[in-house]
Image (tube, rainbow, N blue to C red; front, top):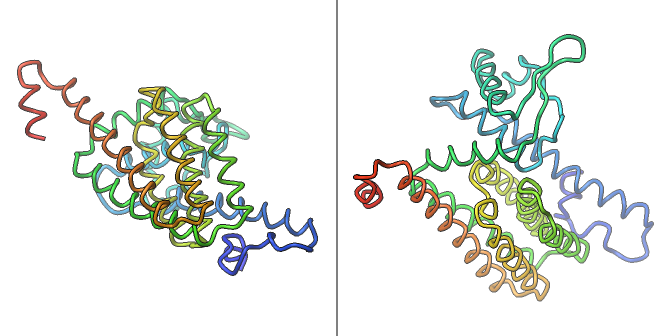
Length: 293
């Protein structure tokens, strides 16, 4: 019931006039808490079976830090508990924690009050993102972009018909926060929150969960303005254009502009991936390597 009220599936809680303003405040807080709680549950959901599971744990935790789902200095669950949550062995988990420590994203303290604690580092997150970008192929990046475009565009289309005044105000605030944020981590977090809140404004729990799952993958990739600061203004303007269409209740425009923006982001990731391959390839084989891809 709390989840349904928080996402506004049964109407627009807290937006009707004449009610107790204290209940409006409780609704607003509940909405944020449910989104955060669901996103954090996605962080610690079991990993799919497959090879290199310790690397998958490193990517999952690194992405959660990049998106702000795990805060700086936050303590991770105990090793046994975390291994069970992620469906990995304690040996695999310890390998992953060692990798995170090496990257500078986790600090382990011994003794009373000890444990593993998050250390948010833009440089470490950028290094992890660049490594992941090289691992993926152009087909992987294209398909990830296709899925994100489908989910985000559908959310924007539905939000144009369903979003409340309170939800629109929240989206405007997120876009303005993105426009003034100076840190890479802060920008990425605001950008991810925009997509998640847009799905919540569509009053769809499933779309919201899909967005959060997608951003755990997207958070593993480089953030465009970190490589070209001039791109931030374009991302902000694209979000403003989508939001303007939602506010006009123009569902088709909201959908189309979201698809176009996600498409541009996908092409940027593919171009950067190919650039990384050219840089890594031996001088005499660069043209062949890129053409083959």
